[in-house]
Amino acid sequence: MNHLIKLKTVIETTGVSRSHIYALAQKGQFPKPVKLTERSSAWVASEVQDWIDTRIAQRDQEVA
Image 1 (cartoon, helix red, strand yellow):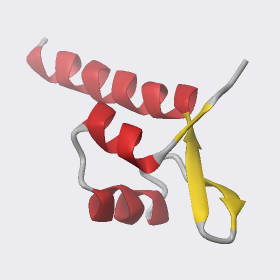
Image 2 (cartoon, rainbow, N blue to C red):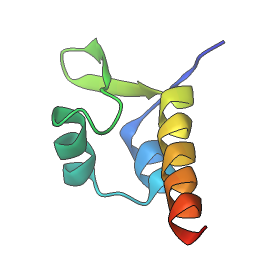
Image 3 (cartoon, rainbow, N blue to C red):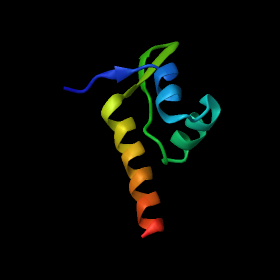
Image 4 (tube, one colour):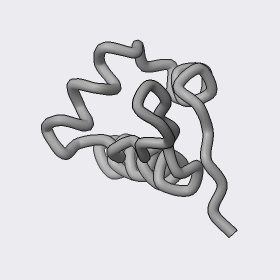
């Protein structure tokens, strides 16, 4: 089951700033947030983890 995480958790998990997360999402390079209410958004935790895993895989291929 997918669960949602708030921006604070996304920032803590990825180490990426708030503004950069939104900029990457706009470019299609980071998962887009799910709008919960007019003023609240969250991200699908598995999509954020997939993004992290992809970054790690890219790093490992560059080393190989």
